[in-house]
Image (cartoon, rainbow, N blue to C red; front, side, top):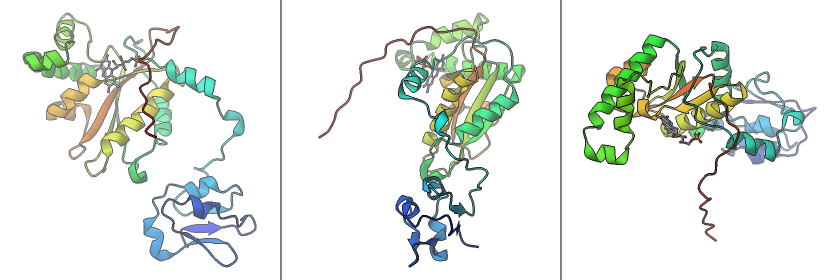
Length: 274
Ligand SMILES: Cc1cc2nc3c(=O)[nH]c(=O)nc-3n(C[C@H](O)[C@H](O)[C@H](O)COP(=O)(O)O)c2cc1C
C-alpha cells in the first residue's frame, strides 16, 4: 500500500493536497488523482497537511489515522476577543492548594501539548511528571543548594538580585523554589532533536495556557531549570535520562489565588522593515 490512499469517488480533483504539501511530493495522475512516488515517500514528514486541507475527506495517509484526525468543528472556533482575554489573563501562579493534580488531567494537558509545532515535525518532546511531596522537597533543596553557590558570586547576584532572598526564604521554611506546587511537569527532548529547546518551550507553552481551562495554574520553574543544567544529581531526581539535553520544568496545581485584572505590559516594540 502506498503512503496515500485516495477515495476517488470523494476526491474533488482540485489539487489542494498537492499545493499544500510542504515537501512537494504529491503529484497528480492524468485523471488528477493525487499520488506519492515510492521513491519520494521518505521525504514525507507526516505533518498531515494533505489530510487537513482536503475538504472532501477523500485522502488517507498510511501513518496518520483517520480516528486521530477529527474534523474541525466550526461551533468550537473561538473569537479574537475571547482568545485575547484568555491569553492576557494567564498568570504565573505562586500559591497553590495542596490538592494533587489528577493524572487524567495531566494526560489531557499532554494530549493537547502534542499539537505544538516542532522542528521538521520531529515531535521529540517527552514528559516527566512528579507529585511525590518528598521528591518535590528534595528537588527544591537541591535547587537551593545550587542557588547558594551562585549567591556567593557578585556578578550572579547583580544579574539576578532575587537569589539571596530565595535562599533566605527557603531557610525560613518557605518553598521559594516550587511555591508549594503539588506537581512538577518537565518537558524533555533528546540531544538529537535539532532545535529541541524550542520544541520543549513550545510544547510547555501549549500545556501552560491550556491548563487554565481545566482550572489549573502554572509557573515556569526557572530556578529548577538553572540547577538542572548544572547538576546531574538533580537531573536524576527529576528523572531526566542520559542524553536528554533539552528540558524545562513547570509548576502545576490548583491555584489558591484569583486574578481580577490583566496588568499592563510594556508597549509593543515593532519595526516594520519595509
Ligand atoms: C522561562 C521562565 C522562567 C521562570 N522562572 C520562574 C521561577 O523560577 N520562579 C517564579 O516564581 N517565576 C518564574 N517565572 C515567571 C515570571 O516571573 C513571570 O512569567 C513574569 O513575572 C510575568 O508574570 P505572568 O507570567 O503572571 O504574566 C518564569 C517565567 C519564565 C517564562
